Image (cartoon, rainbow, N blue to C red):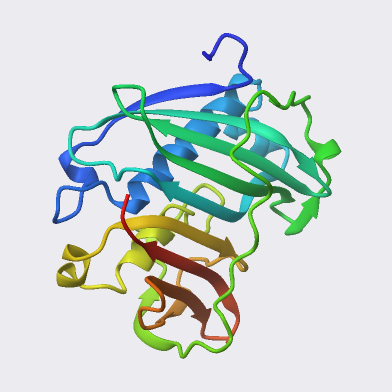
Length: 250
């Protein structure tokens, strides 16, 4: 698989010191960011640049992500990210990922769902509204469409801290960038708690965009069967996201 046929797009990254946490492991936000960058490059290679999408008043909105680690990336790891458009179902687009280390061993895989949106009217668009043809890759599959995430109703959620969206978290669509939610979720645990945990899987569903100045109450559960649930609620009592950090052995 290479970039000549553009069906499976490949990008290479090295985990730098600025990408790591206090254990010299890659921050979750860094992993989400390189996935996002690879997807952007894949779409751009089809002739649909970010600038062209903005001119057309269109944007991509991630709905759900399901990311599973087989080994967690560390400082100086050289990573290769493969991504492809798997297909559409209704208004949803599925994009899959596989991440490999320098030895060609798969260390992570992910399934994501996206929607094309009118960034002015803030409404979902059908796939046919995209001004280019996207040929989906059917030669590989990480799995079916990921299920939306929601904390079990029986769990007791408590507020861990409050987060205000500032300039540093904004993207070109003027809302909190998807990758930043990785930091928000990981921040519910202390460095001491991270010392005894290995992140095995991360799932998140984005329900409502967060804009500059919005303040979110970040809520967490206690550890439940090795999992920590996290959700963010706006000051208007609107749920913005729900996520689950799953811990275990590789």
